Image (cartoon, rainbow, N blue to C red; front, side, top):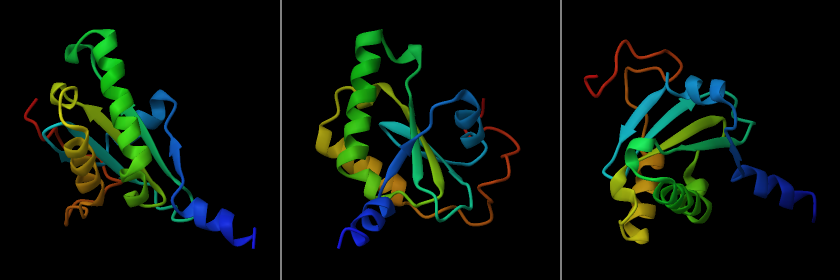
Length: 137
């Protein structure tokens, strides 16, 4: 019936992070480093809400054409593959690295799916801000 289809679609629906405060809030969550990107994850503790995702590419990564291409490739990887692995009620920010520009799409997509499915680190609450940056800066 039509009543069961929207629930099934909502289970894997992925929303968008749109405002700066939303992106800044996710920075307080867990960081999952990878070769092609960094994934920041924040559990909002709202399991009935859809997962939300945002994308960031800094100017340091290249000119506007290259940055837009990186962002489009990551969006497509989420749309095709990784969006189904995102937990409802969580926010994800994908921060692109230069290597994501020339990586084979299959590898990029598989790496993103792996980072999204990665289990949360034990002993670290995703709602409490980290005392310092993990990358030593």
